[in-house]
Length: 135
Image (cartoon, rainbow, N blue to C red; front, side, top):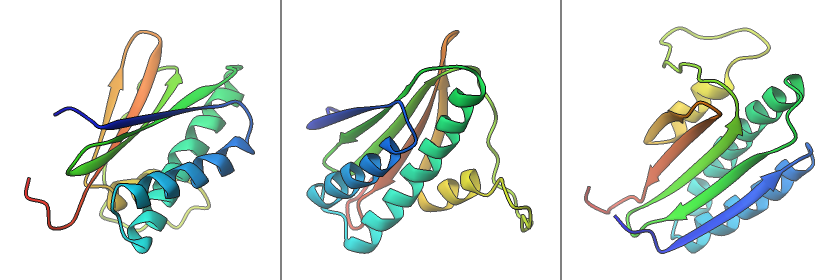
């Protein structure tokens, strides 16, 4: 389960999320994902980073980190922020609120989403398998 490439980017301001989109697109294409898959991966990364940015600004934190890990059969993206754990669940009903659809979107785009947490940080780990590669 060794990855071949790891990228890291530190987000300190909202504009940094635009750079995350550029990096995600570049990483996804270099990992062999299609243009459509790359766009969806950018959307998932943007949603995860927007959630993390809102959390750090509301809680007086300075930054959070985005990681991309390329494996032969998948891409793993991880957003790590200082803070506590929260739960994520896939809802069957439609959310017609103006907020709160980002996590649902991520869950529908990615093949696997999990939370890893320590006493001082929370990581949202998102995995997308390459089509046609056996598990």
